Image (cartoon, rainbow, N blue to C red; front, side, top):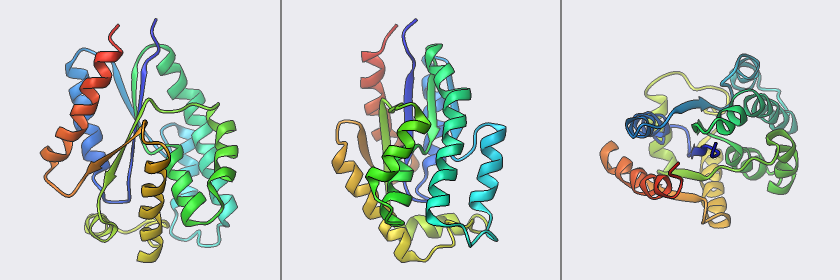
Length: 211
């Protein structure tokens, strides 16, 4: 059976990833393809417990290297337990964040270096690379305000705006590094306008991967 499709979404907190993921899940399912959605960090019980540690507002003493390794550990479990088996079964997997988040948050914003993060995550992911990645491009000030209007911030969201600007700059950097895979989606318009951009790329991809 043909390998499934691995689709990831990236962007700052509050950029609208979750809404677009839900729309895309329904869109792909409507075309008769089996699709699952997962999130990072988390997605399976072990990874969800790691997520609690990473995002706990009280864990302010977490070292940057510890943070990177915790994300990688959560990712390793999700990849081995869910993502790879689903792809091997020919399913479409949509993931809310993947390795690019670590490149940006730990490699760039935390200044650990993208190459260091890549080395660690190549082990964690068994060198799995998404077929396509959507970067929802939205000004970090607007995105963060949207997020904080919904609920209390987690440990990462509590960082000052300078950190979130570095995250945004990091996404711009990796979008330039991997232009064939990472598609910049303007997230400043309506939900429908944003999804129309996503759908265009997905229609092209699904045509190439017909069973």
